[in-house]
Image (cartoon, rainbow, N blue to C red):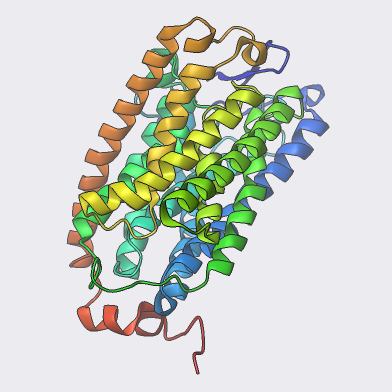
Amino acid sequence: MLFKVISAAGLVGTFLSGTAFAGDASALSPGDTAWILVATALVMMMTPAGLALFYGGMSRYKNLLNTYAMTFVSYCIGSLVWVAWGYSLTFSGEGAFIGNFDFLFLKGMDISSLSGTIPSYVFVVFQMTFACITVALVLGSAVDRLKFSSWLIFSVLWLTFVYTPVAHWVWGGGWMDKVLGALDFAGGNVVHINAGVAGLVLSLMLGKRRGYGKDVMFPSSIALTALGAALLWFGWFGFNAGSALAADGLSASAFLVTNSSAAAGAVTWMLVEWKFSGKPTVLGIASGVVAGLVAITPAAGFVGLFASIMLGGVAGGLGYFSVAVLKKKLGYDDSLDAFGVHGVCGIWGALGTGLFADPAITGDIAGLFHGNPGQLWAQFLSVIATMAFSAVATFVVVLITKMLTSGLRVELDEEIEGLDSAIHGERGFELI
């Protein structure tokens, strides 16, 4: 299966990502391999460190460790599911909708197997980190009231039946790439829209937290959240620039626009919040960084500097209004705004790719503003398809999880006590 990567000079480089084979040693690029190893380590850090701190700091003090534990264990579960069957379902076969079990437990691979210019094992682990963080992002909608046991089962089912099909559509030779021609460089549809919509469905089916809309629910530590956002920003360079799968000019361009979009998102969120609420909060600045990073993710390999600033800036404003206005108006309890930031800004990023895709970066792929309105239409259809599938499939996964665990929510007394002590027997903070 051919995994297409567009070079900075506009040439199309082909990476055999779906098929592991014993390649000629001369095809291995030490430079590409070294960079993707580093990029993989950067993306790995994003889940059990960056996202765990980001989410943990936003949760209430009595649920900080529970939030951290569920984020941390998401990486562990994702790692095992991916090498067992997730990679195979995503990157094997020629099916339009799902792969097969040709690479079950990485069957047929060894240390000489190559995917393009890098070892297949490196490509497997790089893609694994994307699967892990995607399911962990869903968690943000459900903290403070979800059973730990339910989350474990949900994670396995969701990765298998929701994440892998969408990833196959986009990156594994499925219909969204080959038929529709939608662009998703590093995970707008696969990661952010998918996780954001799934989070919204999970939060609605789970129900609101006790006291939501009545009691003040202070974050446990904005300092931890800000540190988590900084680690996410740092790791996102591996996320986006690493998706070039080479140490080349395209990787450098993706690195540049990732930073610019994040900065624009932070500044815009800060200014908008300052205007409408009267205070530029640290939580708002940190959230703006993530909003900008989300928006540039699908576009990182297709747009230039100016477009990245526009994408990030708009995302900062959209993120603020989705969290401060839309959520309150509609009344849903998306605890840590998985949908408000990742879903909404992911949709904008996917559509923005169809607006700003630049032949100066891609060589032959253009968006609406460069004379190709068809690309925007393809992006729109990809967004609708991802949202619809994620919503329905997640609904089914939640129902199955509920049956297997005799309910999704913790008991009322556990919710009141706090999940750190009720479930884990620990405390994140010793309050005097």
